[in-house]
Image (cartoon, rainbow, N blue to C red; front, side, top):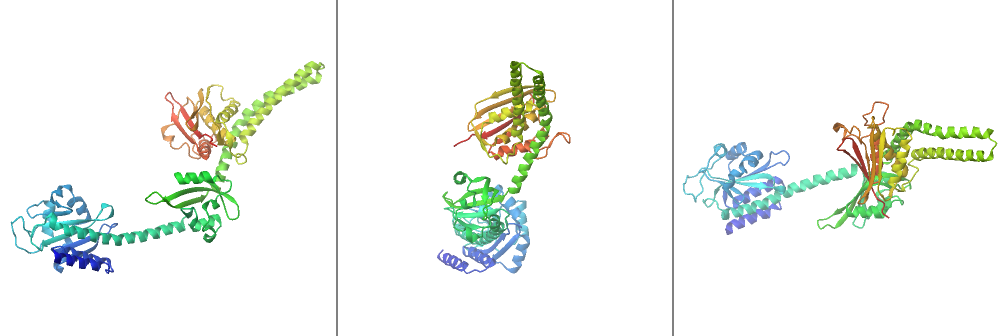
Length: 534
């Protein structure tokens, strides 16, 4: 045992000086031989190609090597056959000892095609037989098979036991660590190169800051986006990149809790502000302590502008539909005003003139109210900043506008308004969402039906439900209805932007929009907005 230990320690001492992978493999084979085996065959696989990457031998002749190289087990045979549970009965520790007395199709093939050293055949079960076989699978990181060791002829001539195989197992574990060390270093090197390329070539701005949120690194895209050089930003807090108008305290709280992601206003070196989609997350160690912060940003100014124009286009399309109804509505008060004005011309009774004048005022106010509703709907949402608004008010205004079209004649309207808290949103954009949803509900009921508007506060959300008893949404369309330009209406009768615009506006205010089939037919759209919290 002392002599074995000296040989093993000698091999280990030479590992550190081994310059190539093959030198390490040869030393491992020698070390396994030093653990008490006359013949050693060791080979490892390429992880990706699953072919033999390198092999080493100890005590084996050149002729025997050629036979072994031709007939050695493939990775598939090791994984699917040798490691099959049916061979577990031959396991001693992690080694597989298959005595000469056992044979099946696979084992017979190994004995027939492999190399067997010459030796005296013995029937003593405590002695090693020339046709006995012993294999040691090599497992790498993640428990995957990375290679195999095959040994033959123990120096003491005895059949292997758990105790006699212990030195081999310990040495193999040590050797695998060296093999994996090389693999791991190569993997890390490749990973660093890939990550470096991703970091430098990424079209998204990437900013890395330390645990105190001081910037320590940024990629070329960040320099281009913000207009600063790396030297100008090093040491500054990432808040330096945000618009002063943003609620930084809220952003930082979300970042430290679950990570922040969303659309925010950023600032360039020139002072010009622009829209960015930002993901800002903490990078923690195993102890859960923040070591760095990673901020990634995309300039979405053009996308925001496109979104604005799409919203305006849909709104203008809606105004076009409303125009005929509005003209009809205005005709009534205008004809009233004209008729009363003509009557006043020939009227001499002061009391009657006063009565007609009051009626003219009422008609004028009615006309002004109609114009006010239309103006409020068409008002530019880009000019209107988000404020506090009660969804019930916006929903009622939307219904009043739709009613002016005269499309509710065969529609029974059920209004069930619960108490709602105010939300942070643009009143005109909110009204646009409800106008679109109510219009869709009416269009789904060409022969009439029931339109139900129901609002409730559910937890921290205002919930608005708009239901119809119409034809419903076909199953094949359900995954597409929120896509831009998707419409089932004939050409010229729909833009395909209505529900897409609803989706965009609702998401803008951190809400959600969904739909469900009604048990009796028709569809219910459910819109939820987080209530305002000071």
